[in-house]
Length: 439
Image (cartoon, rainbow, N blue to C red; front, top):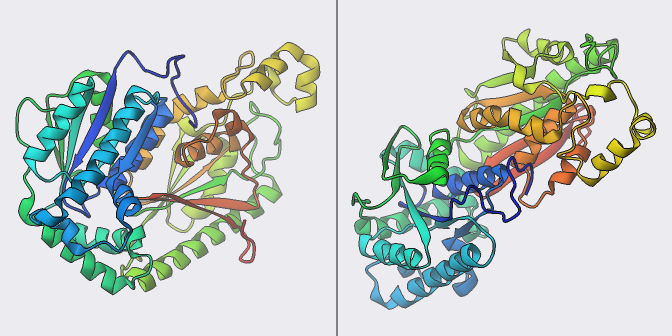
């Protein structure tokens, strides 16, 4: 997995055992978004994790065009189909955690009835898998409606349906399920209750390192739509030197000007597209700029500050310290430090040259930034050296990106990267700083 901060030979961390998170809550409360985000974070830490989404099992077994009665928990005729889908998913989770090398799994389903939850709990306990319930409670109709329009109508269930019909159908689905919803109760259970997407929390009987880590992460999470932009600092007048910390060159100033115009142009395009598709007005959204403390980075951001965009300098966003490789080309490093260079080739993510940082060191340093990105509800532009962008991008990249590839990721100054976290993954676009260029 990309950018593992901690890694062991067994794949199990701190003898923490296996944990299954069992989601609870009506649809459109943020369960899938929270699950995908938590899995991304846990894999980034080095905890082998996977989310199992009940909707995928239902569609695989019965297709997307299933009878609406499937979602009526009081309809006994559909009970066998529901139980079959649930048991198939649970079997796969048990296999993953007992024989597949996984340490944390999420059972992403509604799980509305207390009796059924207890059956599922007992089944996992019988395999020495520790259950943790996360209940998503939303008492704010505005949040639910926005989630339906922005997220649920884009789910695989509605790919062939127009937006208004999809919204109507999904509301009807929620109405069928609502009468059978029983909130979690019981002091013997380990659970987290999230109210109104992080407005406040109830935590009960949390045990061990991993469960505590889950609580910590969930307290930094939200499901509000936002976009993260990644852009390199402009070229400096002494580009090869880390220690010199030189100011922008003339070319760097031109790049900074073009970057500002391209970002603002793209934001207007996005707002117009969202308004046309879902009717949501995003014109009041705020852009914030985070930049490293390198002179060339915050000088690149000055073009945003001149237009009243908040710019924040952050020490944690400084580039990788090259140590003894300062100002050396790759060929010069190979010639001057041949054994070190071979070690680097074997493990480019973890290798550390003398007096230098490794990419692993940079990722560890960036963990507070990652958590703040998850907490932030405004759009964020990060202007930083390429080494930092590589590590941040690796966090949002699809699972399966080997850490050995992180040092090779390219962020040329001809483009910026747009990342949009969603309930079903993270959308990415590479956009040229001139209107006609996109990669």
